[in-house]
Amino acid sequence: MYRSYADDKDEELGHGTHVGAIIVGNRAPDGKSEESGVANGIAPAAKLAFIDISSTAGQLSPPNDNEVLSTGRVTRDRSSPAAHIHSMSWGSKNVFYYNNAARMFDNFMFANDDFLAVVAAGNEGLNDKETSVGAPGNAKNVLSVGASHSFGDDLEQSQLGPSYVADFSSRGPTSDGRICPDVVAPGKYILSAAARPNNPGACDPRNGDIPEPSGDTDGLYSQAGSSMSAPLVAGSAALIRQYFEEGWHGDGAKGSESPMSPSGALVKAVLINGAQADLIGVDNGRKGITEVKPYDNNQGFGRVSLVDSVYIKGKTDVSLKYWDLETLFDGDAAKTYQVRINKSRGCDADVLSVTLAWIEEGSAPGCTKCLLNDLDLYITEDGRESVRYHPNGRSIKDDVNNVERVVIDGVNDGSEFT
Image 1 (tube, rainbow, N blue to C red):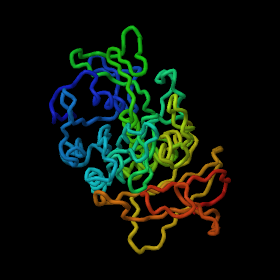
Image 2: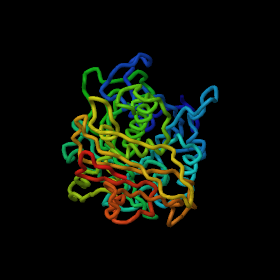
Image 3: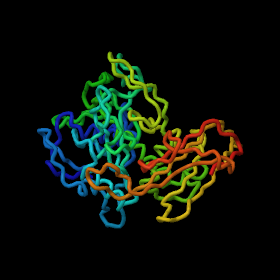
Image 4: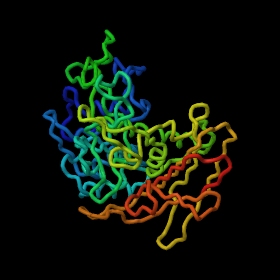
């Protein structure tokens, strides 16, 4: 689906074409017959609804936020929502506080619990600039994405590699102290489609000459930015939705469980729960390396890793247990859930990762404490209340974030966690 708004034209090496193809790109020289190419998208079988908000002069002219987020939401027969994930690779460049746009995004997700907005954190992090994630990437309910380095041929010779955060990636915390970005994903550099409005049918170079990082050849273009990281995560979110909708969440095989439509909060939680906070540092080039650690302002909950997020028989080494759309009212007693470590199927992983994510209404613009509903996650082992594992690297409860994660290393077979 394509909706013209600012105009109905593409521009040479257009931004929207590049980021859209990172999600669903698939080579099709005749525009119809798809085949594998060198820059396929992460979810090439997904469907894309696209709203054109930029003129050929490069000026952004978006409609109101609700209209943007509603792109592709209504099916032709109006029977159900069609687009469940929104990928946003644009935003405010110098608005680093919780503003009305952040509030609108939060309210939209609160009103549509199937929906997840994936938003680029921005590229304002040079010189380790804190609180540089622009709105609405600093909203509470969205999945905010920073940029890490890529791998192999997508790296410049001077780059240190995939275990590093890109120097430009915007940093947290938000103005009210929340963890931001939530996750990071490769964004320096990413090879994807090149818009060629005057050369329709441009595709992979016929001579096999793949462009270098930041270069372009025929129908391919390499760019860097959190604008590239966000669609990678949006495509990953689409695969997580497919995982539940096709019933893989039983024993790791398609159809092993009844299909379900996951909430946006569950998709967000699964991606955060599997994120790997093992990056080495921020690669600042000649200025050296900035140290990073889990839950910090640079990598948030870590780098997205699908193989650490869901169980697929014969492919991944994780076990997934989930609860979705749970209800809790003010004044209710604590809800408890049990997980028993079971290594009988040959699983040798020794890490337990638990994530709680909830969606809430938008806050007042300019809020200095934006959290409205203070839920608290803590974990005990084998019924021992004397030792509690608290979330987000803290030794006490978290009263700031609406995502809380506990990671416990060295778990033993048979141990029960509550």
